[in-house]
Amino acid sequence: MADHDEHGGRPPQHVARLGPRGRVLAPDLARGFMLLFIALVNAQFFLTGSETVTSVADRIVALTQSTLVTARAIPLFSLLFGYGLVQLLRRLDHDGDGAAQARGLLRRRGAWMLIIGFVHGALLLPVDIIGAYGLAVLVLVGLLRARDATLLWCSGAVLAASVALYVTAALTLSPETGGAIAASSLEQQSYVLATVERAAEWVLYTPVTMLTIVLPPLLLGMWAGRRRVLEDPARHYALLVRTAVLGLGTAIVGGLPYALVDARLWTDAPTRGTALLSALHDITGWAGGLGWAALIALVAMAVERHRGRLTRAVEAVGQRSMTCYLTQSLVFVPIFAPYGAGLGESLSVSGAALVGACTWGLTVGLAGMLGRLGYRGPAESLVRR
Image (tube, rainbow, N blue to C red; front, side, top):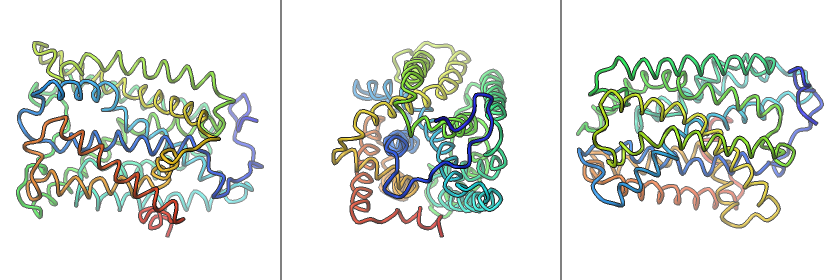
């Protein structure tokens, strides 16, 4: 039975809560797999050398990652975050008489996520996403019980505004800037001075990330959470197949031109044209995030009854996504930063991808161990307290 009537009304109040052993595989599997994408993107973000694509391996990695991963990971996580908000609200307000208390708790969680995000951004990674999600919770908590039509209209409006911002930036910013995120803190030789710079960068990047990348898929995730799309993939099989094909197809078609530039396979593209291709690449990343979520839901449906050790370990990563995300930064900074091993200056794209993949593998092992022992992640426990 769908959570909403066909006219977009509010969800019924008799929905049963899921117990700790009744978690559905698809959302956790998607979050766990998505953190591999986050690791690949953030590892490349730390690169500061002038030449990072120099070999055939670098070109293959850059082409693949730019087409399928970069600017697709955060939209995927944003959709899952919005979906999780609805699941959390359902558990908190399953009898229909605790809406005010549930919204209060969500606001407190959002505020603490904003604080944790700032600490993470200042100490380790200025392009932190925890703060962007915490800020989104504070902004959107009032929409958690809005009508479906309101969610979809808000998502469309924010999407249109973001597209306009991307295109305007591509047309008006200097060719040297190109609208790309740059963090001077990455090249700072002093950790103390880098912390000051990262804090300032975080203050700038967090609201921009929330408005231009996080909100459109997050609102769609809230809509999907109401319909239990990931919790009942068999019932929504046709929708998931269409979303996977169209979403990933759009991301590949829209992202491939700039991926060719990024991989140094198209070297004579005009500068202003490259900026527009970059904007198209990022805009179609929203569709890619939706496509990845749908594809992973289909995979989860296939392996639901026969979860192997690897599936359970990736699921455990998804259940401890904040802890695993923070762990990535704890690994990357000592490896890449100038005041650490300084490999950000010398590694190529393929080398950074190897570091990112190995770091994700480390978190898979860590999360799997915590899962077998029955422990939540430290960051998740902190937020709950």
